[in-house]
Length: 501
Image (cartoon, rainbow, N blue to C red; front, side):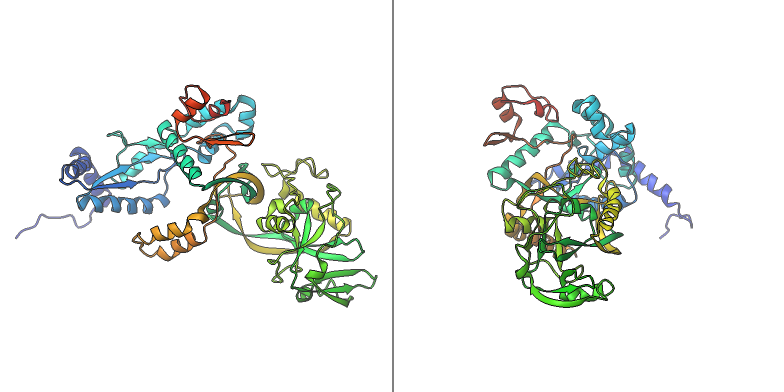
């Protein structure tokens, strides 16, 4: 048997282009769909392709994902399934808004203040498909078989029927008791002025070196109590100090007769500071609960503030065994304060864009991270700084702007994922996992409430109407039209903002 001669050095890019050209000229992709559609009985397999964002170019990171998706599609097609391939574009949210900001050189909040929400949303609508053609070329060049709309399959998340499906999903969750509003601490992007989900906050952790400082607070009886923090900018919002009721603390007296309270197990870390001091007493955290202290800053005078409260999570692994509590900037702080008193004040003195509010008179309008060195100097000049050191730790960053995230109390709507963990785990058993099964199961077991509120402009608004104690959640355009007695042709802002009853 003779075989055709082959070139000793194959030109693989040329061969790939020849295959792609053959597929296109002979309409191979659509022929495979037609062949499987004609089978009796027809077995449908719906493939939901997580839509890419066409506001940025595809890169090498998309290649592996494309290959895996295409393998699923082709395997099912080879099995004779009629594969319904829903390809589309994710055009909502921060990527679109960031694109407009880059194009204009202005922040979204400034554009909205000058030209209005409608103008800004139109800019997002018109600019989001910037690299759609690049994506189409990429998808075809890597050999993926997808329907780009030849059969009416292509969609975008700004299509009104797609947005209406989101309304339906949210109303369904509300009717099942899984959608609720709450005030709690969430990961927050001060650069973008919005809450981010716990999943997004976990995407990018970076090792950073921060200033860790130990500060002394003066108790009303004249003794000092030491607290440690890696976020000096939260100190103007200090509301309480937390101790572990079961932990042993010591009272150290220096040569001037001033007494300091610190966890006994943390004394070694402060050998230099207490080199000339002697121990004059031992107490438990329980003995400290309820004691009042003087604030570092004279910004607030609520009588419930500036007390020592209990918190079992306080440890002696680092710091002083006493935790500075700023309920607006830490979920554990928030819970500890509200467990102590469910009406405990929450001091929120940082705005959506990471600047101190007018409450913080010394640094009003300044970015919290820029103000931190100034706060440290203030504490030093006023005799409150005991120790300053560099502290290396892993810290969450916003994966879009690559800036530090903060934790900030906000009023948000949540999906109560923990309420359905058992059902999720049961359904997860039906998935044929390859390698990742245990990791995904662990993720489900530890799932937390999902904050879905975003303080943004371009996206599907939450279809929630509130008036007094009345709350309505709308699941369709018809429901909106019937209730507000208007014709609705768009579900974006500011259309829904203008609806009144």
